[in-house]
Image (cartoon, rainbow, N blue to C red; front, side):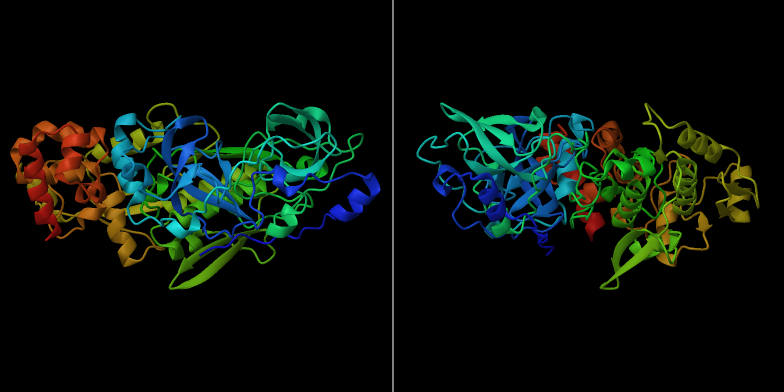
Length: 534
C-alpha cells in the first residue's frame, strides 16, 4: 500500500509568533481531532464520495494523491480538472457499498464524459478487480465546536482554495455569526475567503507539523506573488520546486516564474476514441484524463508516458518503446515480474521535438496518430476512418499496410482463403490474420490480431479465443451466431458498449434493469454466458 509522504516541514511557527506577537486560535475552536488520524488509504483505491459540484449525488472516486491525512480524489468518469481534497475523517467519503446498503444508487458525476446510458456498464467495469479502500481506513468525523469562538487576530493554518494542495499560515480577519474571514499572511487579498467556523479547511497552529503536511511559509505581499494554475494536479510541486509523491499531472502553481518562462508549455488531448493499438488496455483507457496540461513540456511528457505504462497490457513492452537517455530528466516507473523497473528519458527542449516524440510513440504503440493531439476531436477521427476504409479495400497478396512514419504491419493471408473468396465460397471460420511486429511477444501478437481493425463480416469469433478480449462487434456476432433471435437486440450491445469482459459480468437482473430486456431474452443471454464460461 502506498503511504502518504512525509514532506519536510521547514516553517517555524514559534519564531513567527514571537516576531509578530500574535496568539493562536485554541484547538477547541476547530472541527478537527486532537490527535490527527492516520492515513491508511493507498493510491488508486476506490471509494464512494459526494460530488462536490452536486452534493446530492454519491459517485465512485479514486484516490490520486496523498498528503498527510488528506486525500486527493477524482470522480470516475470525469476529467482531471475537477479533483478535490478530503480528510480521511470526512463524512463526504464512504466505503464501496455504503450507498446501496442505505437504499441509494451510485450516480455518474456532473459532466460525465460518456453517454449517460453507458453508466451502468462503466460502473461495472470500474469496480471489476479494482483496489477497494478498506473499511478501517475511514475514520469518524469529529463533532462541531460549541460555537464560533474565533477572535480577530488569532492565527491558524488554512487550505488555499485556489491551490488546494497547499496549507498556509493565516489570520482571522473578521468573525461574524457562524463565519470567519480567513486572511493569508503575506499574500494579497485575492486568496482570502469567508468560511463557516466548523469548516474542515481550517486547522490549529501546528497541525501540519503533527501530520507531516507541508506548510507554505507566509509570503511578502509587496514583492512576492503566487502564480495561480487553472488546472489542478495529482503531482504537486512544493514552493521550492520539490515534487510530492503523488501521480499524473504536475501543478506549477508554486514554480518560480523564471522556470515557467524558460520552458514552453503544451496542451495534449488524449483522444481515447481513436484506435489505441494492441499494447494499451481498452478497459484501463477509460481511466485516462481527456487532456494533459497546459503544463511544462517535461511534465506533460512524464504524465503521458506514465499513463501509457499504467494502461499497458504488458508494462515491460511499453517501457522498451521509450527513448531512454543516460542523462534524462524524466523518470517513468513500471512493474512486471514482481519487481519495479524504471526508464529515464530526456525531455525535448521545444514543442516541435515534443510532438515528434509523441508521433514516434504512436508508431511504436501501433495506435492512431491522433491518439495524442494538440486538439480535441469532434466526431469520428478522420485517420481512424481512413484506416478502416483501407482495411475494407480488396486484399492484395504480399501487400503490406504501412503506417505514416514507417511503422509497418505485415499481413499474411493464406492462398487457399483468397482462392475461396475469388470462387465465391464462404470464408473459413478459422481464418486469422497473422500480424507480426519486431517488438511484440507471442502473447501481444494474439492481442494485436484482436485489436487491429478487421472488415465487418458474418464470422463469429474464433472458438479458441478468449471471450474477455472480444470487441463489442465480436460479442454481437457470437451471440447472434448462437441464437439468431438475438439479432434484434444487437443495437443494445453497441449502445451500452458491451465488450467481451463486460458481457461475461452480466446477469439477468442487470439485463432487465439497465438494458431494458425482457425475461426471455435475458435468460437466453445468461445461457450463452454460462456456455462461454465453461
